[in-house]
Image (tube, rainbow, N blue to C red):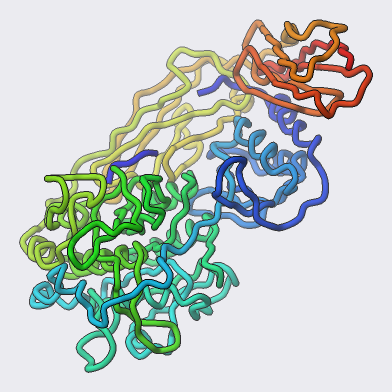
Length: 593
């Protein structure tokens, strides 16, 4: 399941000046769907997801939002992530400005993911997949347990379906913000049946985990789209309810710090998140499947061959049947479905059986058992198509029954990554902490001079410390990390020198090209450099008063200007540099067309 996944101090004055960049983009906003240039991935056109650093005062965020013409819509409190509304015509520039602001850990688009279904596929009128994964032999050991529900993060579930109605727990609708989880698309009902349809009732179909309840969490609309923010909220909701198995048969091709934080949150609470690898027939990573701490599932067919529609890559963990899966349908019927959407809940059902067979297992134990007891397909050992192999329910449940985990006595490892020991800091100081544990890190506490400053529960663990509240001189920074068993790890002590003496020297700025008074060609490269006695915090290029480009913590900037549609006459190029104390220096030239 191992997959992909420092700055100088500044003053409040600098933070506000960075925020002023947003003032150029104020204007009317409208809802819709946006697309990145040159990419097919879509996002909510007038929304962003941001994570302020731990310890940032609300007043500073309010000022920053006001400068950017942004307003908070809701907070995923468990992750410290805010969903904010921004002007749709300026969403890219606002995101860049917020991402470069030292108060903000990350700022990203609220991407749209899609249900991982292959439409209009033929199917077998039987449940071949159950025998293929040795489910009947696993049922000789356990039918599952009512104590191990499966959360289905999807389009809802049909509450009247005879094979599902007696198994549904109260869920939540993240679109309507209510408890109505009727299936609005049909996908969720089919997914739920694959995982845990009521069995041995002389009717319908059999799910992998007979006795395990289902918690429907509705995030996808009738078109099959779901925002990353709603998926993240559903994952944290399930984790807070104590759900150990969370299935997500939805995916998008854009990575997301918000999704990764949600998955980490669930993992640290003992849950296993299972996700579909998507159906693009490519090696493109699909999220949240490609996130760390997720079991990513590709698809196989009835011959144990790799399904042609399935995505693949070294981020795939295991494979499972995903072609012609006979399952429950919205409205009370049954039919065949194909896609990694069904490989994922079949795997989730196996994981639920493992937890049911041995409730004392940790999530790390369960994933290890799942991966070590597959049927190896394709190239020997791990490969990019089948991962560790196609899941085998019987072997996994058998292994679970004979495994009793030892008590976790290992403490987390934790260190203060920045600022560095002996450094001089001022203003708002970004403090970054690295923490890891054999099971998971539940939280990190940051101490300044022995006093608890702030707590962060999501990785990466980042804080913003306002050093202007310190009297000056030596300050000692230390972090403590905790795991779910209560073990505590302590970091090294980092001593920094707090110097908030007023710096009044502005940066010097030079525009090296084009030259002052030059006549413009069709394409012009603007190049500027800046220097300062401390450092250059921000360097920006303006043409006729409009911001073209802004970089952070760099001493040079370039901007390629296509003048084809530029009006004839004189034009001003201005570059502005800011230092950590908020001092600004600039250079101006006039060019002609």
